[in-house]
Length: 296
Picture (spheres, rainbow, N blue to C red):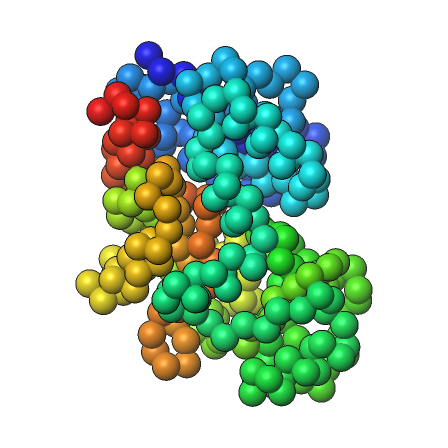
């Protein structure tokens, strides 16, 4: 039986003193993937990514899973990825994850033809930058996000004429600025899950009333979405310009003012896979993993 490490974080375990509010998502995810992998001859083993005794050479491959504290210690995380890549097969590949870690990758995808939300890139989210972004985007309501970050960390929605948030609520360094799209509150976001390029399922992520952040720690919830052929075609347009050696890819899309879905994020490092909305996720995932390991 092949041994594959599923990297996670200590804070994703319910009995950890600093357990995240969304620790249960790790339980849902590993619970959906492990049985299907075992049936396919693969032992998927949870491993804490920054544990002192983590030895990547003990595994046939290593998958980056719910490492959701990595943005707090990105240098240590990257060093771990590099060490893992030297010792065994890393999934997704190191080059892809290094590229995907900074949201500048969205520029590349736009140039390759992926449908994209208009975006301003800046070194800092200062008052001058934000004022200029309102004008450049022709918007009175914007969202500012860090180039390196996840889970709405230090992300802010800012309306024209309002006081800026405190500095510790804004991105600490490089940032991206996009117009706020009302569809996120009215309809939510759509997460398309692909494994080995094969479509698995789509989750509609719905924020709590009065909020726009769709993450569960902010009160968001999800439901199954059955995409139309056209919606799936738009998501595949993103997959088609990505490398073909990926184990997983999550394409997050939001409906723009023109009524079409556009890319918000393409998660290739440690995305939540929304197993509750994917009745066949285990089967599709295990099939993709088996192909990459040469067992199927």
